[in-house]
Length: 327
Image (spheres, rainbow, N blue to C red):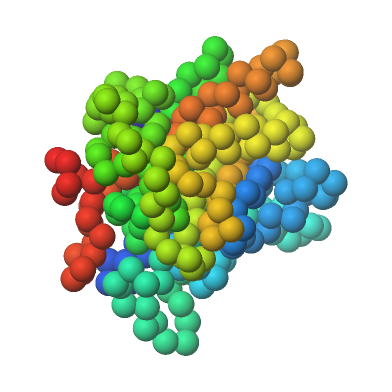
């Protein structure tokens, strides 16, 4: 187990980023088309191809999912992933044509200090192509991919991932944390996700003792829609689109356990759920409860890892990283 979403059989991940731009893209590629659903809770989302994931839509399977910085410009990253997959002959068959199915979501990182003067064409299509081309089982966390330019209320945001075994199933998550709120408690180093931590993966500090008097005090960036936490949870279980949708709904609780506040009118929180279908689901109700519960735990852990692994951007007046403050 790598403690990455790629522990789920049938998934590869690639990152691409531009340090001058201070932004990047993450592509999650399925070895074979997989069942995908989505749940959107934030008030300011930016998404692509999410309507086709509705239960009544014709397309049943998806080739890839893209998470990207760049706000609306970053939606072009999915076009790059589509181009890469088309070169490989991937996609939904329509007569003698194949059309890659690639939904995605974006976060806002346009005012983080990077150079966004890209001229006529934003660079995200190229970043998407590069990310898809580099997809593999191992990938960087923290200031990488879609999380490269991400920020939170207090510390540098980033890209996080985690995984777990749950009976015969594997569950994994990947998340780009660019939240309005905080992943840490009060002014200290402790993470809201501490109860779910495995093997000291984000410092092993546990919960603070005594509990800070200002722990629940609201700390957030401001009153502009400059935020969003976007994620994918995945399992190797065989799920229908309806089951995957509920899997996504349950996984959203992982964001609530790791970020305070969450799902605000100024966030665009979006969680995709994917099932690669490698393991049968003999007890659909009971097993889906187990999978959804584990997905929430794994997503909470991934959020904390995103902050714990991040490095500050190399610009004046940049937001500090967690490691700069607490080592």
